[in-house]
Image (cartoon, rainbow, N blue to C red; front, top):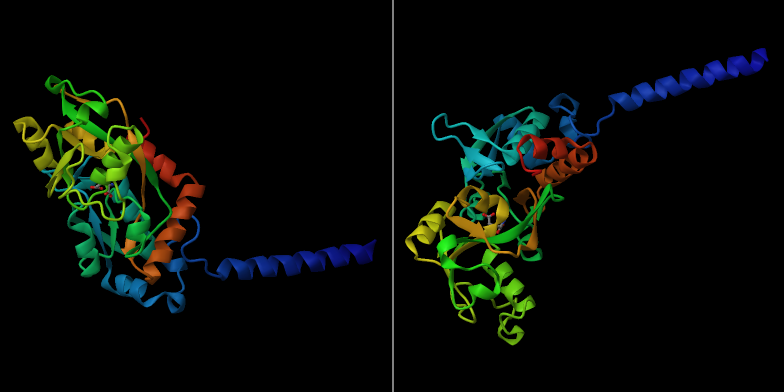
Amino acid sequence: MRKSRKLFALCLAAFMALALLAGCGDEPAKGSGTSNAAVDKSSRPKDVQAVVDRGVLRVGVKNVTKGFGYQDPATGEFSGLEVDLANKIAEHLGVKAEFTPVTAATRTALLDSGDIDCVLATFTITDERKKSWDFTTPYYTDHVGVLVQNSSGIKTLADLKGKTVGVSSGSTSAKALVEAMVKAGVIPAESYDAKTFDPATWTSGIKFKQYDDYPAISTALSAGEVDAFCVDKSILAIYNTGDRSYIKEEFAPQNYGIATKKDSGFSKVCDDLVQGWLKDNTIKTLIQKNGLDK
Ligand code: GLU
């Protein structure tokens, strides 16, 4: 009896020593809130160390997409889910986040040039894009929609036949719309080839005009320069004023991921963090906080 108690005490002591040792060990990017202090400097990839040394994480975000990335014109303050996530990544590294407004047309050039360390800007993960940049596990899924003036009478994908649609340069929108129209039988499948599709030259059943940013498309819609405005519904939301409506269909799920330079050490840090925040509901809470769950 006494012997077994002694053995138990010994085992307990050994277990506690092991647990203590494990506690000192370092699991950099896992879990939700591991702070900078917990990150082992010697194991940090060079590019991550460069951010830490700089003391600033440079992030590309949208500045007109309420709920995701929005800059208050009066205060200059950034807010939204993607701003919150960027601040949390910066906090994990023990640095400050600095925001650069980006559009669908500018975000990848700024990442390639090293002006920004990552993009959190309603950036849809696609196989094509994965060839050039790393993406984290998705933190949000949206769908593409089409916004029209009520006076146009356009209500469905079929009604868009022969119309001109405003899209953003460098976005997935035109391709998603043509694919949805092919699927719905509005555009003949034979005329579509995903590999060669180019919104600038597409004329089968629908035409596109490309713009540098979303406010310009909204203005073009009001002016009758385009018959419809097509992009992710999260982006369309603030342009859906009383005299406008969505067409019936929404299509093409858009998974948003954080984009980083291909094969960079920072890619893994971001993905580990996102996975941890998905698991512990941090992302769910931030989605709710930013009103994106409605
Ligand atoms: N999410 C879409 C894309 O990545 C729409 C464009 C945008 O994010 O501005 O292409």
